[in-house]
Image 1: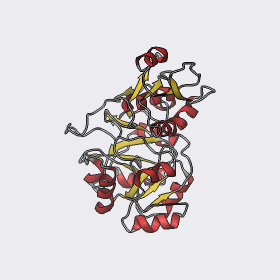
Image 2: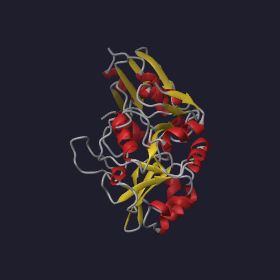
Image 3: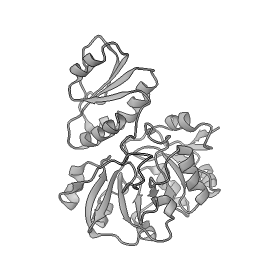
Length: 324
């Protein structure tokens, strides 16, 4: 049975003993283990039922430790790290041999970031090893943004959830890889593309998806699988809410809108991501709303497509993967 606790010393004790602990970040809660412990890393994959070909993200306490785990830092990677760390940017860089292949899905690159959460930064600074920490949810399920979400998923499988409150950003980090030293977005996330381009110029999006688990091709980065972040309830993303409602008129419907309320008698429950139309607030609320609706035993969740810019582009990406 897992406990929800704010006791960082207890988390350190468990992690040092090669156990796994759920930890808070500004994006989502992660299921963390010592990157140098084969036991801990295998436990992460097995607890999540995550395929071993899907790489993990390594979390470090500061930019100063980046050179400890990567062999080469392109100039634009350095610029991005300096601009956004601590924060929701993950960089995929050539790894040093010290990084186990189990972490990277056998690839010669490693995904790494510095999380922007005071609890986890303190934890990382007090440990003498980095942490691998994919989202603390069963593989492909809705990501957790509260300690309670994690406890509901894994109450019989992990010993501790380190409670850091609700995650502020609410969706995963933006992942950036490098090809010929030029940055490429592998996964849209909590840092908007416009903010990234302000630092490094125009950037290509290689936000492609890989089918799982049949596909043997190892994805370039975590979070690139076609079905991911998905409720158990059938989910539909639409640009025309009224037309889509008509298609499910005999069903129990939960509706997610961007900001406005839709008047339609067949809607059982509807929740706006942000009544003020704020994209950051929408991102912060997304997964919690999906959790709420997924627990209502509805027939279908209908989600309104958001404006396709800024974090709206990232939210649309998550909703698209939830419908696969």
